[in-house]
Length: 220
Image 1 (cartoon, rainbow, N blue to C red):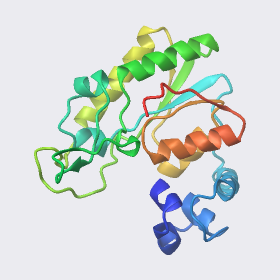
Image 2: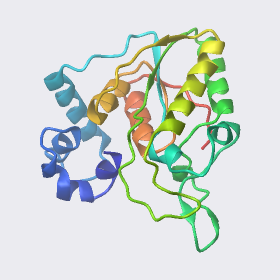
Image 3: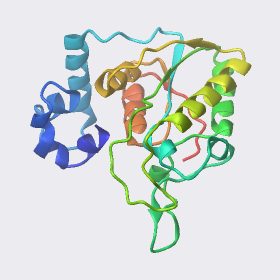
């Protein structure tokens, strides 16, 4: 969704997805990356779908799961230990060390978030993630192969939830929903913790535009 918002391809293809957030956005403008029009589209879709707001003293945490974990050569323990990258530059024989390519946050990142939430006395957290996001066919290499399951994503989610539970946070259930619902729900967070990737960064921008708080461990 964020790729369509940020790139001209969205203008060409949004009509293939009628009624979606990105379709409503391009009904308003032919320009990409216009957050004012995105805010307007968010409000329309939220009203039409009766999307609820997160409770005001809850923090919503987005976890980037799916392909960037399940297709990766790294274990969950390795993801939690230090920053890892996803796309591999075969010409340079190394991962592309760019902020956009670092999707999965470490244990240190979430411990920093916990410290900040304790400071502002927020101790209820909801986690939003998609275990089944693995849409792209990939070239089979030892660095990245398409996985047929989400076992590593499940393990990662459990590990992050345990970090918060061990710090005596109350974990509030959030039922799995579609990307539009998740994006809009998180956009109305009073307190929001982003992961890596443009989807999460775009939500963080909307949260800040609405005058609310983004809590980040700042690994980028």
